[in-house]
Amino acid sequence: MGAKAETKTNVLELLTSQHAELDALIGKIERGKDARAAFQEMADKLAAHATIEEKIFYPAVMSKKLDDLLHESVEEHLEIKRVLADMLMLDNGSDRFMAKLTVLKENLSHHAHEEEEDKMFPMLRRSMAEDELVAIGNRCLVMFEDLLPQHPSRNVPNETKKAAVLPQPR
Ligand SMILES: [Fe+2]
Ligand SMILES: [Fe+2]
Image (cartoon, rainbow, N blue to C red; front, side, top):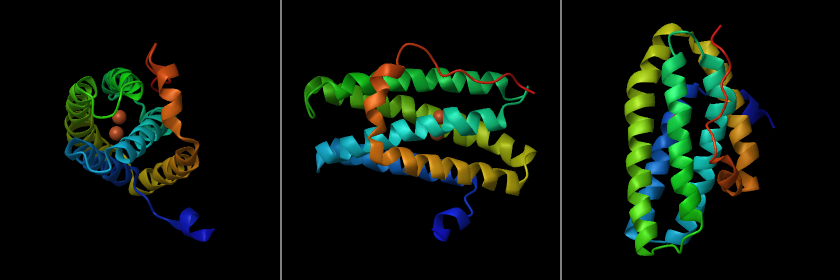
Protein backbone atom coordinates (compact mmCIF):
# COMPACT_ATOMS: atom_id res chain seq x y z
CA MET A 1 0.00 0.00 0.00
CA GLY A 2 2.34 2.63 1.41
CA ALA A 3 4.61 2.86 -1.58
CA LYS A 4 2.14 4.67 -3.80
CA ALA A 5 0.75 6.98 -1.14
CA GLU A 6 4.23 7.91 0.06
CA THR A 7 5.70 8.62 -3.37
CA LYS A 8 6.69 12.24 -3.65
CA THR A 9 5.68 13.13 -7.15
CA ASN A 10 6.09 16.71 -8.28
CA VAL A 11 3.35 17.00 -10.88
CA LEU A 12 5.61 18.81 -13.36
CA GLU A 13 8.13 15.96 -13.24
CA LEU A 14 5.39 13.35 -13.47
CA LEU A 15 3.84 14.92 -16.57
CA THR A 16 7.24 15.54 -18.20
CA SER A 17 8.20 11.88 -17.74
CA GLN A 18 4.86 10.81 -19.20
CA HIS A 19 5.54 13.02 -22.26
CA ALA A 20 8.91 11.27 -22.72
CA GLU A 21 7.26 7.87 -22.45
CA LEU A 22 4.66 8.82 -25.07
CA ASP A 23 7.47 9.98 -27.39
CA ALA A 24 9.26 6.67 -26.93
CA LEU A 25 6.10 4.68 -27.68
CA ILE A 26 5.45 6.74 -30.83
CA GLY A 27 9.02 5.97 -31.92
CA LYS A 28 8.33 2.29 -31.42
CA ILE A 29 5.16 2.45 -33.55
CA GLU A 30 7.09 4.31 -36.28
CA ARG A 31 9.77 1.64 -36.33
CA GLY A 32 7.08 -1.02 -36.61
CA LYS A 33 8.41 -3.07 -33.74
CA ASP A 34 5.54 -4.54 -31.70
CA ALA A 35 3.63 -1.70 -33.30
CA ARG A 36 0.17 -2.96 -32.42
CA ALA A 37 0.92 -3.40 -28.72
CA ALA A 38 2.88 -0.14 -28.68
CA PHE A 39 -0.06 1.71 -30.24
CA GLN A 40 -2.55 0.29 -27.72
CA GLU A 41 -0.25 1.24 -24.86
CA MET A 42 0.38 4.72 -26.29
CA ALA A 43 -3.34 5.32 -26.88
CA ASP A 44 -4.27 4.33 -23.31
CA LYS A 45 -1.42 6.31 -21.74
CA LEU A 46 -2.19 9.37 -23.85
CA ALA A 47 -5.89 9.17 -22.95
CA ALA A 48 -5.11 8.79 -19.23
CA HIS A 49 -2.54 11.61 -19.41
CA ALA A 50 -5.05 13.98 -21.01
CA THR A 51 -7.68 13.04 -18.42
CA ILE A 52 -5.51 13.69 -15.37
CA GLU A 53 -4.48 17.05 -16.82
CA GLU A 54 -8.07 18.05 -17.59
CA LYS A 55 -9.62 16.73 -14.36
CA ILE A 56 -6.89 17.47 -11.81
CA PHE A 57 -3.85 19.40 -13.04
CA TYR A 58 -5.34 22.23 -15.11
CA PRO A 59 -8.15 22.98 -12.60
CA ALA A 60 -5.63 22.91 -9.72
CA VAL A 61 -3.33 25.48 -11.35
CA MET A 62 -6.01 27.69 -12.93
CA SER A 63 -5.31 31.38 -12.39
CA LYS A 64 -5.95 34.65 -14.24
CA LYS A 65 -2.39 34.46 -15.55
CA LEU A 66 -2.76 30.94 -16.93
CA ASP A 67 -6.39 31.18 -18.05
CA ASP A 68 -5.63 31.68 -21.77
CA LEU A 69 -2.85 29.09 -21.89
CA LEU A 70 -5.01 26.47 -20.16
CA HIS A 71 -7.93 27.06 -22.52
CA GLU A 72 -5.55 26.80 -25.47
CA SER A 73 -4.32 23.55 -23.94
CA VAL A 74 -7.73 21.87 -23.74
CA GLU A 75 -8.33 22.89 -27.38
CA GLU A 76 -5.01 21.25 -28.30
CA HIS A 77 -6.09 18.15 -26.37
CA LEU A 78 -9.26 18.12 -28.47
CA GLU A 79 -7.25 18.20 -31.72
CA ILE A 80 -5.03 15.38 -30.48
CA LYS A 81 -8.03 13.28 -29.37
CA ARG A 82 -9.64 13.70 -32.80
CA VAL A 83 -6.54 12.33 -34.53
CA LEU A 84 -6.27 9.52 -31.99
CA ALA A 85 -9.96 8.62 -32.41
CA ASP A 86 -9.39 8.34 -36.19
CA MET A 87 -6.34 6.15 -35.66
CA LEU A 88 -8.29 3.81 -33.38
CA MET A 89 -10.52 2.98 -36.36
CA LEU A 90 -7.71 2.41 -38.88
CA ASP A 91 -5.56 -0.62 -39.60
CA ASN A 92 -2.25 -0.39 -37.80
CA GLY A 93 0.48 0.35 -40.29
CA SER A 94 -1.82 1.40 -43.15
CA ASP A 95 -0.77 4.51 -45.08
CA ARG A 96 -3.51 6.62 -43.49
CA PHE A 97 -2.63 5.34 -40.03
CA MET A 98 1.02 6.29 -40.53
CA ALA A 99 0.06 9.71 -41.92
CA LYS A 100 -2.10 10.36 -38.87
CA LEU A 101 0.68 9.15 -36.60
CA THR A 102 2.90 11.89 -38.03
CA VAL A 103 0.19 14.49 -37.38
CA LEU A 104 -0.34 13.18 -33.85
CA LYS A 105 3.39 13.32 -33.18
CA GLU A 106 3.63 16.92 -34.40
CA ASN A 107 0.57 18.07 -32.43
CA LEU A 108 1.71 16.29 -29.29
CA SER A 109 5.24 17.61 -29.58
CA HIS A 110 4.01 21.20 -29.92
CA HIS A 111 1.55 20.84 -27.05
CA ALA A 112 3.66 18.84 -24.59
CA HIS A 113 7.11 20.33 -25.20
CA GLU A 114 6.53 23.87 -26.49
CA GLU A 115 3.36 24.81 -24.59
CA GLU A 116 3.51 22.78 -21.39
CA GLU A 117 7.19 22.10 -20.69
CA ASP A 118 8.58 25.34 -22.12
CA LYS A 119 5.84 27.85 -21.16
CA MET A 120 3.38 26.55 -18.58
CA PHE A 121 5.63 24.48 -16.31
CA PRO A 122 8.29 27.21 -15.80
CA MET A 123 5.53 29.67 -14.79
CA LEU A 124 4.22 27.16 -12.26
CA ARG A 125 7.68 26.38 -10.94
CA ARG A 126 7.98 30.08 -10.09
CA SER A 127 4.48 30.63 -8.74
CA MET A 128 3.73 27.48 -6.74
CA ALA A 129 5.36 25.82 -3.74
CA GLU A 130 7.03 22.43 -4.09
CA ASP A 131 4.63 20.79 -1.61
CA GLU A 132 1.62 22.04 -3.59
CA LEU A 133 3.11 20.58 -6.78
CA VAL A 134 3.77 17.30 -4.98
CA ALA A 135 0.22 17.15 -3.61
CA ILE A 136 -1.20 17.66 -7.12
CA GLY A 137 1.28 15.11 -8.49
CA ASN A 138 0.17 12.47 -6.04
CA ARG A 139 -3.49 12.99 -6.93
CA CYS A 140 -2.62 12.78 -10.63
CA LEU A 141 -0.64 9.58 -10.18
CA VAL A 142 -3.45 7.88 -8.24
CA MET A 143 -5.98 8.75 -10.95
CA PHE A 144 -3.60 7.73 -13.75
CA GLU A 145 -2.96 4.31 -12.23
CA ASP A 146 -6.66 3.86 -11.59
CA LEU A 147 -7.57 4.73 -15.21
CA LEU A 148 -4.90 2.82 -17.08
CA PRO A 149 -6.18 -0.76 -16.54
CA GLN A 150 -9.63 0.38 -17.78
CA HIS A 151 -8.24 1.05 -21.29
CA PRO A 152 -9.13 4.75 -21.26
CA SER A 153 -8.53 5.11 -25.04
CA ARG A 154 -11.99 3.54 -25.45
CA ASN A 155 -13.51 6.82 -24.22
CA VAL A 156 -11.57 9.02 -26.62
CA PRO A 157 -14.12 8.77 -29.50
CA ASN A 158 -16.72 10.22 -27.08
CA GLU A 159 -14.50 13.21 -26.27
CA THR A 160 -14.08 14.63 -29.78
CA LYS A 161 -17.04 17.06 -29.87
CA LYS A 162 -15.79 19.79 -27.60
CA ALA A 163 -12.91 20.64 -25.34
CA ALA A 164 -12.93 19.80 -21.63
CA VAL A 165 -14.54 22.45 -19.44
CA LEU A 166 -12.25 24.31 -17.04
CA PRO A 167 -13.16 26.21 -13.86
CA GLN A 168 -13.10 30.02 -13.71
CA PRO A 169 -9.82 31.52 -12.50
CA ARG A 170 -9.90 32.43 -8.82
FE1 LIG B 1 -1.69 18.62 -22.03
FE1 LIG C 1 0.90 16.92 -20.91
